[in-house]
Length: 424
Image 1 (cartoon, rainbow, N blue to C red):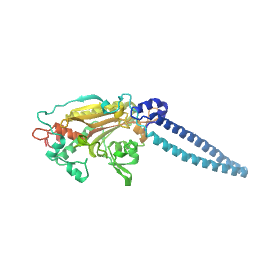
Image 2: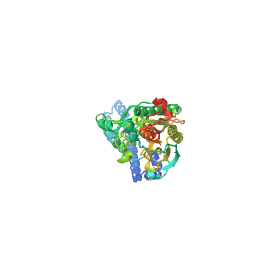
Image 3: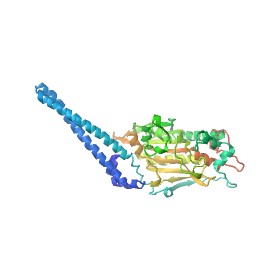
Image 4: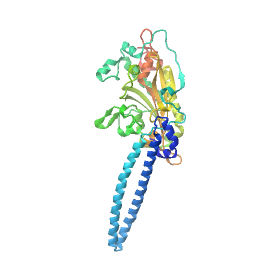
């Protein structure tokens, strides 16, 4: 959620930036926010004045009674009664205006960083870096869904039987390879100083709101309506919320957290090749890295976290590229995002496997996550997170890249200590 003082001081500049994020009426919404904030301030001033007046009158009542001025004291009591009524009305109005202000503020997405390219769609994203690894092209490569079926390591039909499409069942060495990837990603994060967290897989409304899933992405989440809970779309939600309402000390920065969770998303995109096999699922496994940092450091940390993901792809020897997302393709809550894509040699296309984002103060303002700065003032921290990594498309790319003409899959050396086998 954007900060009202920044909106007041930079209204025109921010409106222009938000229009680049496809919010055509940004200027109008910002004006509504500022008008509501003015109304809120006026109500608060009137409340302060009335409370001060009531305190003065209340003090005078005792004095009047001591002086035997009973009629004047009773008149003063009647006046305080009227003031109490006025205060209650203003307090009710204040709550209404506060609610309307917050309701209007959440319409506004985060402001894109000055380094983000202006664009309307994915075609306007910028390839920042690409790294290629060789693969065997001497025979016709199969897509991962055929490989997994032939080897009996993923059963698509059983998933449909148990739940529905988008819920595959991993079997035998397929399940062990999945577990090996999770362990490798977590161990790698641990060596980089991330503290491992095992959070709940369901969160309450306050948690979903604080990280920006509500109200923007409500339709994408599985809900448990009876209990008012939500299945997590990513570990970012519970892990970041661990620090909701906290006041950090300077020497606690950076806070580095990681966690593995299954993730749940209702929408699975379009039909056809885009969602075939492991390309897009309703339930999938992912290791997430999260950092809470001083505002002066967050863009250096964004680069560091992105390089962390690239190092994982290097270790797996998967061809990948880093994209800097344009303004029109960024998420609602992000100020700057890098996407990492791997090349699927069996499908001949790029697959997104990670997004690494800096949210600046957008999440921390909702979280009320602050730190005490050197000048003893409370400031909002910056929050960042990234997928390190999402497993389905990594699994797809691994099966396709490491397939042999004999139908076997060779396991990358870095994973063999985790799998206990070298081929499938």
